[in-house]
Image (tube, rainbow, N blue to C red; front, side, top):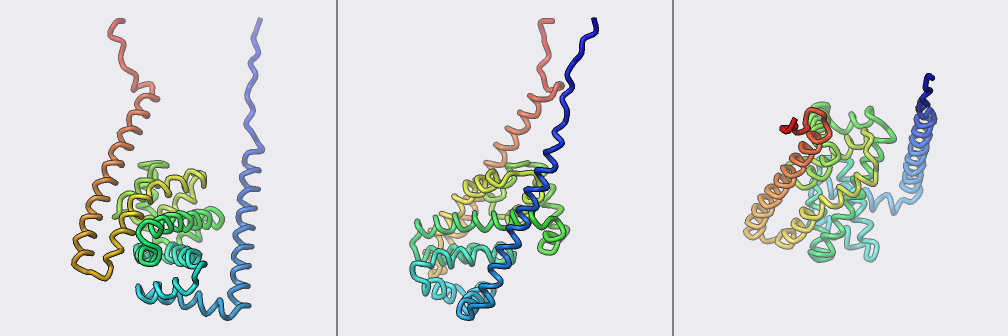
Length: 262
């Protein structure tokens, strides 16, 4: 008797669900943008304050940024978050400038925590912008050569690329955020890798930022911190690459060990 096997039909609703989720994300992004634009235009005081902060950030005025952030009092962490989001979108403004401001205002530990959380939220914003607006939007912010190198890095390391990029100080992270948003990577996985990878650099730069007005100490500690983070990042990269290589060998048929007892 001829056996009949049930053929598993592909889930035709999956692409439709993906399109619906993308549409909702685009609508949400549009609503947030419109709400922010309306608030910026309707409230002149808010417009003047935010514009002042952006100008200070673009000029790299550390003292001005410190005074600008401190004037918000209890709302200062939100002002710092705003600056972090702006620097992430308007790359390549260094985030270490905002980290130093947070360190001086809130101390090395709380300032470091604020910088880590703010940097994670800012990266998530870049991720969501790329996912909702697509490659045409990303190509306006990231040059084709940088985007190509970033895609190669993402292909080589997979999801671990986000963690590695945060650990190695010479790897620009903003292009990684945009490139990750163009992939199938989940937002939760991206944020988790960003948060964990940001902890060493965020806390280190926060403590180094205490010596921002002492150039001699700053140079020595800065070089030491940079080298330490570089070694840590490459060590973690080496471990992750080896682990991924072993997993690929174990999962491939050719990677199986030969049977010497045959």
